[in-house]
Amino acid sequence: MMAIPKKLVPSSPVRNLIRRVIRESHRATLLARPGLDALSLRIQLVAVPQDPASPPKGPDGRPLRPFARRPTDGVLKRLVRAELDGLLARVA
Image (cartoon, rainbow, N blue to C red; front, top):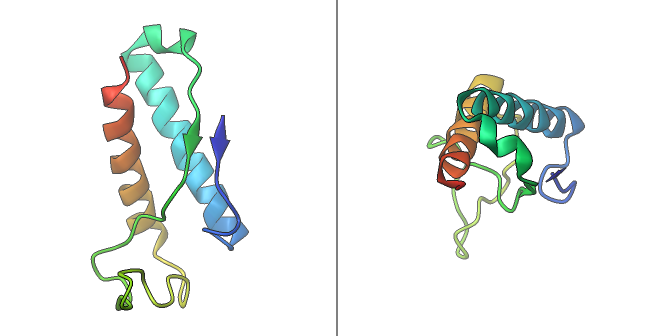
């Protein structure tokens, strides 16, 4: 089960891209560790991964306009995949 809030990612193509990357990572993890299919996982996006070349940050530390321009698909895919692979590696 996964939750990608529209509030965090207003663009539906970007939400779909994130979902696709989550599915790919989960399938790859299941191939490497077959015992994980018995577990029920919930993946919820709580913050959008930011590219190092992201827009400037405001006083609260959040990007001023994270969707002023759409991030490059390759950059976003790599950031989401790296984060998710790290999280799935920690699952018992």
